[in-house]
Image 1 (cartoon, rainbow, N blue to C red):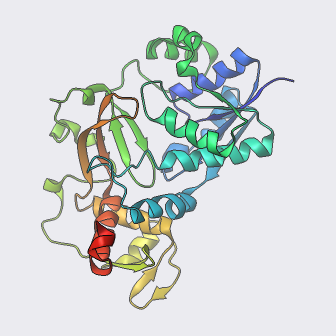
Image 2 (spheres, rainbow, N blue to C red):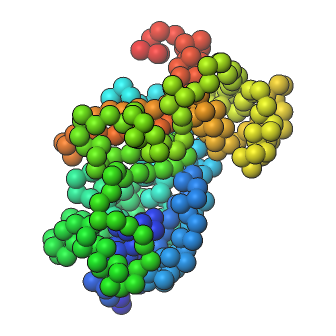
Length: 327
């Protein structure tokens, strides 16, 4: 019986090449899976692209509410922050993506799980530990750790050439100024020009890089206030000027009123806090961090809603917890 592989798919150059290569290398049926964790317009046309690349099926799982309620909110309840600055926006998304993939893999009878994480980064560990916990009998395929894959694709130029030869519909250039990963909690920028620690990511030249936020210099000079309603450690409502109009503009839904507050789902809370924080220049972080594998990596992050939520939660803790519990 031929292999049936489920692959974590984004529609970009790397995972598109990976999808077809797995199909050819293993003579396998390949199922593409993409999780909607709040990356928005990046999902447009994804199913058609996956099928035209060689996938037998493409599943797009809407995990936005689950991601917010079961992963982001508990993480902030735990006060999790890495090396004092990083709100773990990429890290916390990988387990929910893996969970969604495993559910589809079991539904479709797939026997293997593949991802496009490199052998240098943390994502390989995140995906594989989550998969091992949820489906220990499923085979794990990590092409970037396979010598034959690296020999065929030593760089982006070879991947672009392969894509053109095989008719894979991707748009890419041989060099990227940086890589970007987006979800409901944040956007991260890494690699490329950002690997130079002397490169200043706050200059006018980098203005177009940012998506979720304006710089503090470009933020309004007048303060904007938000009231945050907690219940058992989680945000259940917000109130700020013109919130009803913004809920409509962002195509969200209020669950009614809790006193003066708009009652909101965890997903809607994050969208609104991102909007509010972003337009006020909140949540930008530029840091060099230690990877699990021992390397150092520079990351530039936009986490406007997460920054507000983290600080609000710490303030709530100061009001409600004894010193022994807090420390």
